[in-house]
Length: 115
Length: 114
Image (cartoon, rainbow over all chains, first blue to last red; front, side, top):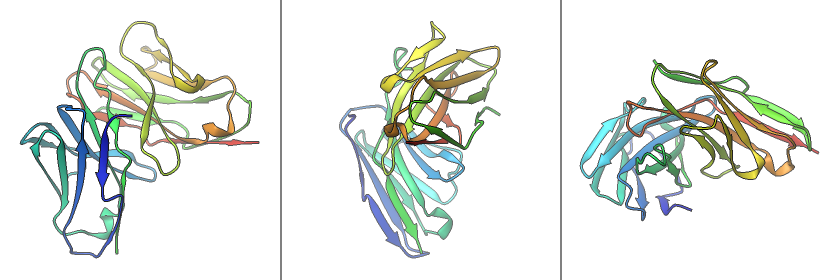
């Protein structure tokens, strides 16, 4: 298994509070991603990073920010959590190479509940 | 806009029966295609992928998929399913001009009954 950990694995918080989720990898992959998974929507990309301090928005970036100060860590922050951000969040990594075709490896997920 | 459509949200089958999970995509550029599996309360695991070459791709756990460029499809098949195949299956596409980003389908929940 690819060395990807997410913390915390479960979190319950209240509306309006800030929340930070952490993704840590030991594979030295250049790309890192944050997705959210909701029933009927599959996985939707929130933000991604293509190198240290290089990030870009995904499909559903409103209300989220990210930071990547080291290759191995990618942080997702909800500045002021809302109930619509209740979801399961997955981190993924990839190292784009011709033979891999940008295959992504996924972490175990973080279940976030915003009350 | 590029998109991925999984035509069935739920597929119930009996053990040892064959199954096909359907996936269609829309794209005007070259694509790489993937099927991922998610077992309950776990992350996603790669089943198989199509990059180039033979259009019939074999993956883990006896699954295979066929890339059909003219029909823009990448259907997943298994000739005989087991109870342990019960999971959610996601088709995904990464586009030649989109870096490493994946576009996922909505998922198909496969339920294998004894």
